Length: 201
Image (tube, rainbow, N blue to C red):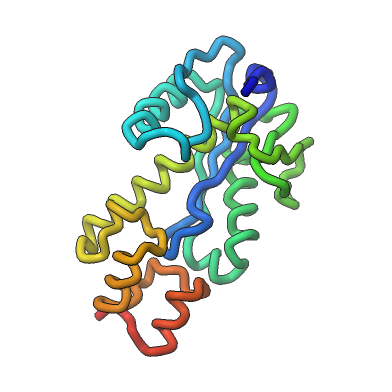
């Protein structure tokens, strides 16, 4: 699929990572790529191995005209819900760029309300626009880094393997060890366990 749109050096691509997991922050990244970027294999982060994502993340940070990664934590997710917390993280990522883009491409079908810049929502943008693909990689690797840090603190939950998603192993660990402060209280499996008083001791 063509990524020709991704070479406009005045435009930023924005994507998020971590809307679905039961634990941790939701991340968003904004990236402006130069016209002459050289990022072999660049595509949607979900289609890449972790090793390839990590390697590309280093190259993106080296080559990007500007980049910024932002997050909305579990308190914001609880206060605003996951959709609006994601929008807030996206707006923060754009605001964090040291260069103001002429236009912002947002992956998906929604544009953050408080972006204050010309913007376009692009469905499957992470497969169509290089700057969005780059943003998806930075958001995903930042999100994974949080999961590895959480795994160091609470190895019994297996965060390094399931990355916080509601896998059978994660749900079993939740039932055995209880809900952590970092879990998303409004997500159904977590909410159900909290109703039973199953908090981490």
